Amino acid sequence: MGADKAGAWMADFAAQIHDNADMLTDLDRQIGDADHGSNMDRGMKAVAALAAADFPDSGAFLKKAGMTLVSTVGGASGPLYGTFLMRVGGAWPVEDSAEGIGVALRAGLEGIIQRGKAEVGDKTMVDALTPALVAYDAAAGEGTQAALDAAAKACAEGRDGTTPLVARKGRASYLGERSAGTQDPGATSVTMLIEAAARTLA
Ligand SMILES: [Mg+2]
Image 1 (tube, rainbow, N blue to C red):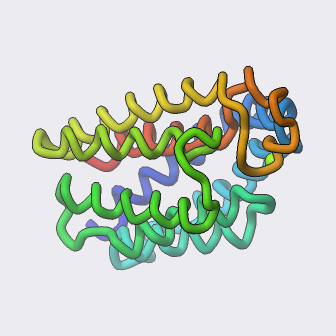
Image 2 (tube, rainbow, N blue to C red; image 1 turned 135 degrees about the horizontal axis):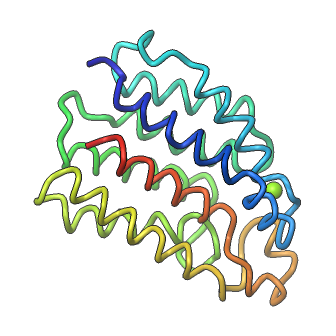
């Protein structure tokens, strides 16, 4: 099996990012510096160019994917996505299981929180990922697919919930009250990541 599933996950995410790069950059133009889509597209193209078959397992592949994002994506996104994937890879289960994948995703979220120091309500990717993992854990007893589907739905709801929030982290926070009314770009792209997981990892 090697890293087939993780390779499919990253390939799906790379395609979503590429197809939505202009939309992500437009969101970032409104409350950031107009580079989220182009940055992530550059990084995920580099990840998609990695050959999953060259890696012994999904954990090793995801760690390399994370390192690749750190070295190719500037701004806050590279370190945050890179940390997420390195932590997920480091905690990836030897035998795929709903519980094991949940533990790995949780390790990734904790890495993002450590690195970015954001809390729920700050208008960041944490507002989408946190409810996603709560929903994942609640559905994990029904299997990996059910857990990932529940996570993707909750992630999208969390993403939508960032629109009215006033940003308290990152460049968007410089705008103060004017950051309200725009969906957070990071919460938007991370929902694509979890939706890609629901299509590929079970
Ligand atoms: Mg930006």
